[in-house]
Amino acid sequence: MPGQNQFYRQPEGTPKGVGRESAQEPVVRRIAEPILDALGLVLVDVELRGRGGSSLLRLVIERTTPDGGAGENITVHDCERAHVLIGHALDVEDPIPHAYVLEVSSPGLDRRIRSATEYERFQGRLARFKLSKPLSGQGVVIGRIQRLDGHQVWIERSSPPDRKGGRQRDATPIPLVLDDIQEARLEVEF
Image: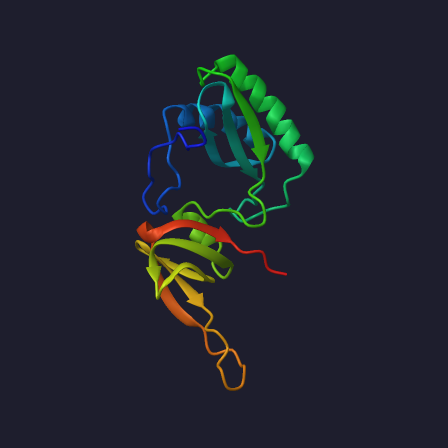
């Protein structure tokens, strides 16, 4: 089906629908990672969408600090350099047997959370969770990531203001089962 992700492996500790891979992904990673490393960047995600000549190969990159935290923001120049160098390397090795468009981008401010290590990395940050099984009648839940505990992530969900004084009630810690999370994204805070 056009527009469908072509990667099919589900890593442990990853929300449903995230982190799927095909036979091409390890080859693309093997080609891209040394190039990005030389540029001081890391590969966050590889996604192949579509089929045939209308395919899109998206590489998501970021800069990290030596301790694994987020570094400086990715610039358009970083994406351009990575695009040119990785594009040439992919042309030489030709891991994808048909035409495709290569896109290199940053994860963005509202980036997806794709792995257990990213839940740990983004502790304390506000995130939006799309759930496969509604929680208290809600399919989308917003809360602060507190911790990862086995196969569930604990978030602190703010209660709505009380009806009398309009004051915010205390936040409530709740567990979300990783297998029930269809998508998790950081929320932009101002």
